[in-house]
Structure formats: C-alpha cells, structure tokens
Length: 207
Ligand SMILES: NC(=O)c1ccc[n+]([C@@H]2O[C@H](COP(=O)([O-])OP(=O)(O)OC[C@H]3O[C@@H](n4cnc5c(N)ncnc54)[C@H](O)[C@@H]3O)[C@@H](O)[C@H]2O)c1
Image 1: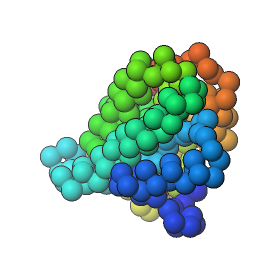
Image 2 (image 1 turned 180 degrees about the horizontal axis):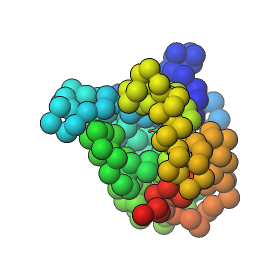
Image 3 (image 1 turned 135 degrees about the vertical axis):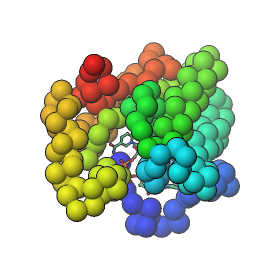
Image 4 (image 1 turned 120 degrees about the vertical axis):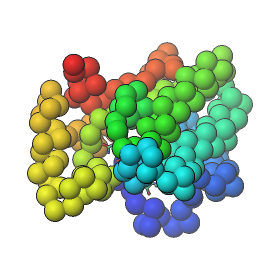
C-alpha cells in the first residue's frame, strides 16, 4: 500500500479515465492477460464538518476514490470477461460501512466502493470473475500519519496511541497484514464473491 506516485515512471492519475485505460493497455501489452487487479488508490481529503467541507474537496475525493475505482473496474473487467477468469479487490474502508465524522467525501466514496463491488460482483460472477472489497481500519501508512496530523499537528503520535487505545487489539494494523489478505483474495478465493472483508482488529464490531 506504500508506493508513492512520485517514484513511479509515468504514473497514472486514476481520476482520469484515459490514464486508467492506458495503464490497463500497457499491462495487457506486457503480460498478455490480467489475472488479478488490486484497485487501491485513494486519498483521505481535508477533514471538516459537512457544512465546511468544500465542494472542490468533495469533487477531488470523489474523482480519485470513486471514479478511479469505477474506471479501473470498467477497463479491467472487459479483459477478464474475455479471459473467462480473474479476480478484483477494491479498497473500501471501515469508513465505507460506518460513519466516521469530518470526512464527507471519504465516507461517501468508500460506501460507493462497496456498492460498486457488490453490483459488479453480481454481474460478472457468471463470467468466472470474482470481485470483493476490503474494509481496513487504522493501518499505519502515510495516509494515517497525515490524518493524525490533521487532528493534532503537534502531538500526532500521542493522538495515534489514543486512537488505537479503543481498538480491541490496541494497535494499528500493518501493511503486511493487509497485503496478505489481498493476495489471498486475488489468488485463492475463487468462490468468495461480492463480500466486504473488515480488517480492523475487530473495531467495527465494538459497541
Ligand atoms: N491506512 C489506513 O488506515 C486505511 C484505512 C482504510 C482504507 N484505506 C485505503 O487504503 C488505500 C491505500 O491507502 P494508504 O493508507 O496506503 O495511503 P497512502 O497515502 O500511503 O497510499 C495511497 C496511494 O494512492 C496513490 N494515489 C493517490 N492519488 C492517486 C491518483 N490520483 N492516481 C493514482 N494513484 C493515486 C498514492 O500515490 C499512494 O500510492 C486507500 O484507498 C485508502 O483509502 C487506508
């Protein structure tokens, strides 16, 4: 989950359909087929109450988190349908199954990712393609560091400790734990289709 856009040669901006079409085309030219697709790019957006959440910010978050996931599925699914097999994992969030607060764009788009996942799973199962979503809780990445800095710029590390103190497992999840789940879903989970799997230490089940 860690690759930064700036380190990649000719990065694609997933909010632009032509970029997505291009990266899918290049992948096909290089490998001849697409067996697994991790549709993961996303941003948090600037935290704010709904009334103060700017329309520009909302559009930006929708462009990357929702349109980007849709464009990816649209162009990859055509190929997987022709192949008669393939697996897709979309990255939703606990914020796609619960309200978070101060994150109108993020929460709306992650709920949207869950909807896109379920809709396309129902459509493409018949073509041998399974599509699932993951709903991570707090995983220590650049995004979470940025999020904590928005909450408390001076003491963000303490804010992080407080944040995970209410998690049943009392810690952040790791990128390795998320990538193991994604690898399983992309390679060994052929009959799991249309599900949203929480990976959050049990936090979303807590009363
Ligand atoms: N870290 C968490 O706690 C957490 C929790 C729930 C969901 N998620 C989701 O996991 C995914 C990965 O996030 P992360 O935590 O690794 O954050 P991150 O900021 O480390 O990674 C986000 C990635 O998305 C890429 N990206 C951003 N805008 C893009 C664009 N327009 N086009 C192409 N790529 C773009 C970035 O380059 C980066 O590689 C996101 O969808 C995020 O919403 C993260």
